[in-house]
Every structure is written in structure tokens, then in C-alpha cells.
Image 1 (tube, rainbow, N blue to C red):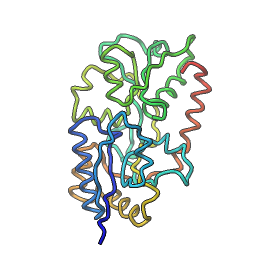
Image 2 (cartoon, helix red, strand yellow; image 1 turned 30 degrees about the horizontal axis):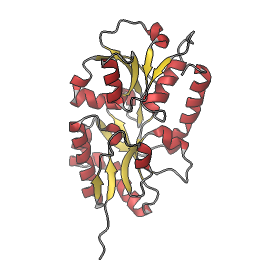
Image 3 (cartoon, rainbow, N blue to C red; image 1 turned 120 degrees about the vertical axis):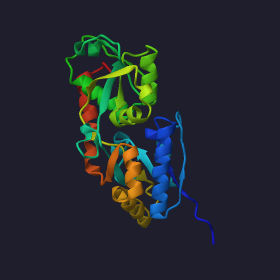
Image 4 (cartoon, rainbow, N blue to C red; image 1 turned 90 degrees about the vertical axis):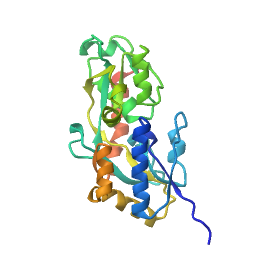
Length: 271
């Protein structure tokens, strides 16, 4: 009998450090055991494009940002498995997240100065690292001159480094990534402070390739949704600052392109 190759699992979007990656590896190991579906954890480390990961036919479980998910048609999208629910107050017990607008801890500027500062962004198809800070900035009084925007910085660690080296004044960090760093690598955040938090939007979700059999998808989804009912699963979730995985409201992601277009209109050529 031919050996069935494993599906791949990846936590690239939230691999904020070695310890945290180990915790995600624990979750995927639990998922594999619980579901009976063999999963091979891969790194797909930056700067490898996330779009290549999301397009893989052997994709079993990986995080996908809501904005690129929203741009794909129903026939093109990977299959939604489950969405994480953070224990942080901004999540309000729902599969939502936000971005923290952050600056150097010793920075002395006032909120009114924000439009005139140098802003850092991660990648253009990132909701948390690009579209969320643009929407936040669009809600501030219109700047008299174009906003200085520097990027791509690739990920939250890139934003942290750019602030630390003085390349940018402010940037946006995924609030859940901040939560993971604050819990497991607080020294990385020591030079920073949060100066604002954006509105919440649907959180990045775990997805599988559309090429997976419906039964495989159903088994993986069922295991994730009941993780908080399992002793080991609950411990792993707690270590990751999660209360559970929830069924994602796929239609909620469809609002993200309209929000981005509103920012384009309000910012004009500023960013």
C-alpha cells in the first residue's frame, strides 16, 4: 500500500520567537494526534512569500491574513478551518484582533504629531501591518504634507527593529503578536510603548487547501473547535494566550477591501 504523504502545517504569521514557535509545534502535534491526520510542520521562513504557502496543494493548516483571504473569490480561497480567540480584552471573547500603534518608549511626541511622523509598514497585503494603520491614520486630521511611509518591514520584528534603530518613528504591530511577545519575550518589547490601538477586524484564520477532501477538512476543523474541551488542548491554548478556536464568519472578511478603499480615498496620495 502506498504511503500517504503528510499535509503541511505552518504558524509563520505568529512565529514571533523560538519559544512561541515551539508552542505552535505543540498545537500542531496535538492536532495531528487528535485528528489522526499526519501533519508535517514547516517554517516557510521570511522572506519566502506567504502567498506561496497559502497556494500549496498539500496545505493542511496554516494561518492566513484576512485581507488577502478577502480578495480571493469563493472558488479560489483556501478552506477556512477555525479562527483563534485571544484572551486579551480587545478580542472581547470573539475571533477578532487589532493593531497596536507603537513608538519608542522614550519618544516625546503628542498624538497630534502622528501624521507628520515616519510610519513603518510590513507588507502591502497585511491587514495588521498595513491596512489597519492606514485606516487609523485616515481617521486623524488630514496632514498638510504627504505621510512618510517606510517599508516593507516584513513582520512585527521588522517594525520593532526599525523603531529601535531610528529608521521609523511609529509602526503597527498585530495586537495578538504583541500579546505573544509580551508573554514569552517581553524583553523584545521593552524599548516600546503602545500609543493607540486600532479598531478590531476579523482575526487571521487557520486554512487548508481546497484540494483536501471534504472529510479531511471536516476532521481537522472538528478537532480545532473542540480543543478547549480537551485537557492537553486547553493547556496548549492557554500557553498561546487563546481561550479556544471558533468557527470563522467568512462573510465578515469581505468588508476588509471596502475599508482599505475608504483609507485610499481619505489619505489620497499621502500613503
